[in-house]
Structures are given as structure tokens and as C-alpha cells.
Amino acid sequence: LCLRTGLWQCSVAHGAIIALPVAIRISRLYRSDILRMSFVRCLGACRAALAPQITAWVTPIRAHLRIRDLRMPVPLRFASALPARCPPRRSGRSAADTRVSERTRLPPYRLRPADTPPALAKELEQFYEFLTVRFYGEQEARVAAVTADKYIDIARGFLGWLHLERGVPLCDLSLTHCFPSPERAAVAEAFAHLEWLVRTRQHSPRTELTTVRALVQIAKFLFRTSSTADPREGDKPFHDIPVIRELRKLAADASKRARTAPLVADEEMKWLEWPKFLACVEQLRLECAERDARGRTRSPTAIAWSLQSYLVFAILACVPDRQRTLRELRIGKTLRWNKTLERWEIRHGPSDYKTGKDYGERPPLVLSPRMYPELELFLQQWRSAFAPDHDFVFSKKNGKPLDASAVYKIFTSTTFRLTGKRTNPHLVRDMIVTHLRSTDVSERELEALAIYMGHSLEMQKSTYDRRTKAQKVAPAVDLLESLLVPGGAEAITPPPLK
Image (cartoon, rainbow, N blue to C red; front, side, top):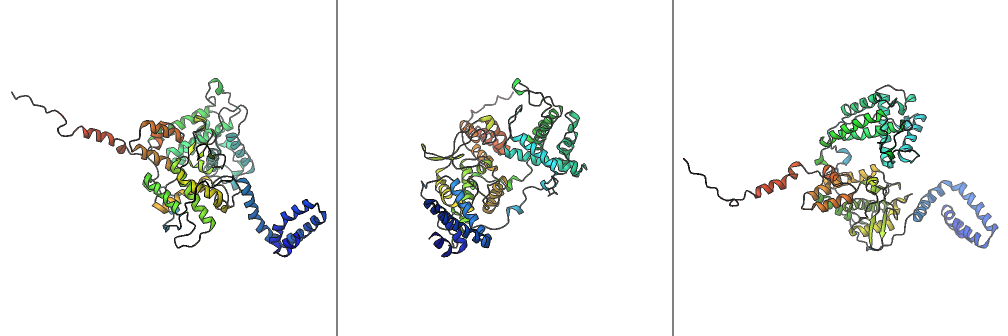
């Protein structure tokens, strides 16, 4: 009966997929070896004849079933509030065509993975492991994977410069060319590379500081067995390596210059006032409708993408955190439902955010109830439209997890479409701090915000407050002006003339 209804009355490709689990269950139930063997022979013939068709049908079904097993069941606690139709969408230039700085585009110089010799590729893998994996005798805590990726990219830049500018053959390239010895003089090539980046590539002091930090890590990796420093005894890590001490001096100099250096990009082309950003969030919520502006039904992928874009903006509006929080959001792990307080929260341990080693476990990051209907509807129904192969909340359209460039592109393209500004996700932290410091918020509230955002109050003032000096001293100007009110001072009688 299973063979007839599953294979012959349906199409062969459909029947092979439908009848397979049914036949296995029936054969196990009745312990029928004859039925099992008959089905296996029939299925083998079908696969030989229709292998491409079967593969095309099975792959999305397998992905869907796999995701149903991975994701947590999310009940719809709040009624859906999706609009009936999308508002008309603004179209025009692409954000990729708009430059926010006057720097010219230069040819790439980094060593590409395809051009990396096998020995050097293995050395870079060992460097990445040194950065991210604990080992006996380590002098410092390991860095996050996203930071290690950045350091690997900078190392490839140094290696590419050695090949193109210094003429080192590809087959001979090695990290040892960056620092041939642990002595102070070995910093010469690194210094020349930094000067080339500043003069030729127009790198800012902030970018220079990041590069120096990566070079310090390369030196630590190369001379990790030569150092006898013991931080447990009060020693500074690797303080006995002369080249590392010299690199730290370069880092201190770059940091000093970075504090007073002007921004390279035109902030006017990226900056959004906080009320304007909130208006973008509401506009994205209206675009989550199942029908477009003309009343036509939208595809499941389009609806899912609109919901995801809205949630990315809405989460940062109430939790102004780094974009890593969005990329690493997992149901039941970092994204949790608090049954006691009946609210959605983001929970971070020390290893889940940038400054975790300094501040430890974070307080719960509370999501606004305004987004609960869309969040739960996305998790329960629309997220599977991407056929994701992971348990992260957000995905690319191909089902892969979001990476840093994908989040950046979602943000810049969306804000440019809605406002004409190329706002990036990290700028949201600056926008909320600048907005609140322009109001009558107390110092106590600002300190609480700094703890909530995972940094110090001093960092809030020096890094995230983007007010101009004129805006910062405006209260003082108003205060002095209030003292000059006519009649507010006693009349002074001049002394008689002699």
C-alpha cells in the first residue's frame, strides 16, 4: 500500500521523498524485511533515474526540518500588528555610490588568501590560535574571534606590503619578516610600514593605533617562548621583549594623536539626530506588511527581510550596543524570555561582549515591548523563509549567519534610502549619548547608561559624546547671560569729581 500510494500514484520524485519515512516506519512496525527490501530496490532505481530532481526537492526540505529542530518554539504571546500595506518606498542612488570622505580609492595591497603559500597559511592559522585559544603559560587573556579576524587582516596587509614594496618573494614570506629579532632595532620595518600607511594610504591616527595593536600581537606570537615575564608576580606581559616595548611606545604616541585628530569622514553625511533615527525605526515597522503599496502579495523572503531589518533597528534603538550583539543573538542563549518579569532580554556573560573582561557579566539588556509582536512573529513564522542552517536569530538571504559587513550594509543602505544619510550601526551609540547629553539628564542617569552600554563614564564623555565645543559650553553662555538681566544688580553711584 505504501509503495502504491507513495511512488506510483504520485510523481516519482515527490513519492520518493514522501514515502521514505512512511515505509521505514511501516517496515519497523511490522518487522517486514520483504517490504523494506522492495522499497529499497524501488528507491534505488528512482534515485538513479532522477537524482538531480530528488536532490532539488530534498535539500530545502532537509534544511527546513533541520531548522525546526534547532529553533526554540516561540509562542505568540502578543497579537500580530503588521500593517495591511507597505508605504511607498523611496528609491534613488545607492549608498555604495556615496562617499563620506575625500580619500581616493587605492588599489588593494593585502596578501590574498589565494596567494598565500601553504607554509605561511599554516603560520597564520597558528597565529589565530594563539590569539583565541588558551594555553599553558599565557600571559594575557585571549581576544574575541572578531578581534582576531581584524588582526589577521592587518597581518596580511603587512605581508602584502613586504611583498609589493620590499620585494620579498611570495614563497619566502613569513611573519618573521615583520620582526626578525626581539631586539629594539627590529621595529624598523614596522615603523616604515606605518609611515607608508599614513603617507600613501592616508590612514588616520585611529587606524594607525589599531594597526600598532595588531603588530604588538604579532611580536608576542613570534617571541612567546622567549619571554619570562610573569603577570602573576606583577610583571607587565612581555615587558622583557625590547621590540614589544618599542611598539608600545608607538601605540602610546598614536593614541595621543588620535584623541585630538579630526575625523576623516564627513559626519554630516552620516549623522542622524535621535528623533530622526526613531522615525526610521517606525517607517521600517510599516514596511513589514504582507502586501506592497499596490496591494500585491509579497514573497515570504521579502516579508522576512523587512521584519529582520526592522528588528535590527528596533533592538539598537532600545539597546544601543555594538553590532556584535546583533550578529551573535541566539534564541535561548543570549536572547531569552524572562518568565518572571514577562519580557524579552539579551543576556551577556564576560565573553559575549567587548569589555567583558573588565566589567564581567552584564545586567539584562531589556527589549522594548513595542517590538514583541514582530519579534515573536519573525521567530515563529518568517525566519524559516531564509532556510537558515544555524540557530542565530538573524540570517543573510542565503541562510548563512549575518557577519559584520552584512549588518553594516543593512544599516547604511536602509538609512540612506530613508534619509539620504549613510549611518553605520556603531554610530547609534554616539547618537544616543550625544542626544541625552544635550538634555537635562542627570549625571547619575548618564553613569547608569554608561554601565548599561558596557563602558566607563569617562569613555562616554571622551568617545561617544559628539557634541561640538560650542554645544558643550552653551549652558555656560546661557548662565552668564542670565546674570546680565537689567535691574538684577544694584546701581552703583560713581564718586564725585574733584
